[in-house]
Image 1 (cartoon, rainbow, N blue to C red):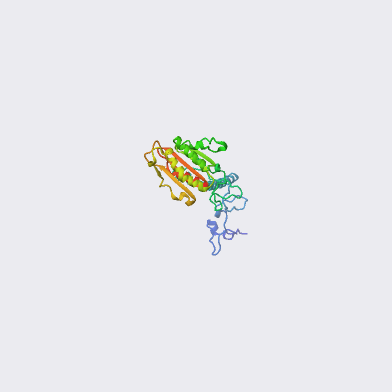
Image 2 (tube, helix red, strand yellow; image 1 turned 90 degrees about the vertical axis):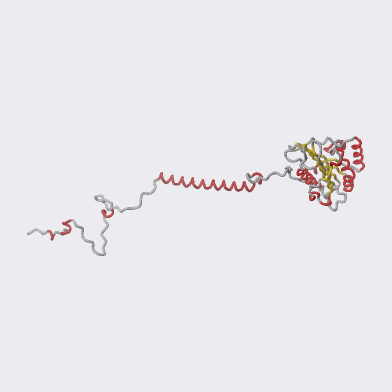
Length: 314
């Protein structure tokens, strides 16, 4: 039999013999083989298709988790610091904040004032039911406490912490003057004298004396008729013409008509120190507040001291 011609060989045609790819038929896409995908096929294996890149390994995954934890911790710390700072600012005093500090106006830092409790059923000294104006609380507990930083004077030497009449009269000059004033206190029925004093770092010496009598009428009369006049030779040794009412003292601090307040300021020329003095009558008690300082006694702490002592007595 004759051999088949090339045209009759199965799978081999002219185009294949020339190495030319067969033409693509319309509507039919060429089959994607290994060569088309760009991935060489291994002998005896199915063609591999391209897929997603390799994922993170175990070491990289742990590093990512640590980074997220660090970032979260940093945010939490910042939030805590911001909250603490905001709370600190809201709780701080204005004078404690840099840039917001207010210059001192000269007032002293007194502790919080607390009136002593009254005996059960006892009215206050200015109550309508208290016609004699009696202070039923312990007079020693009604003394204004010393301000912060002050050096207290020694306690009175009298029995029970009361000041003796002799010690009270000691600053007054002249034996005759002391004798006359002492007799006046006896005639007016002096009951007790409570006293306290201190010296502040600026050199201001403060003395507060509370004299208790039988009624508000007696206390008011004694203040106006005797105590103010008797003090002139005691503290104002240059003469009465240098003794003038402190017209700069605020009227609102005089507590209306329930309290008699007479503030004085020694006028120039005074000696080595200036004296400021206030007399006030509240109920059955007369308070004498004296401040002296070399070169001049400041008005602000004097008014502050008088006002606070008045509040305790009312």
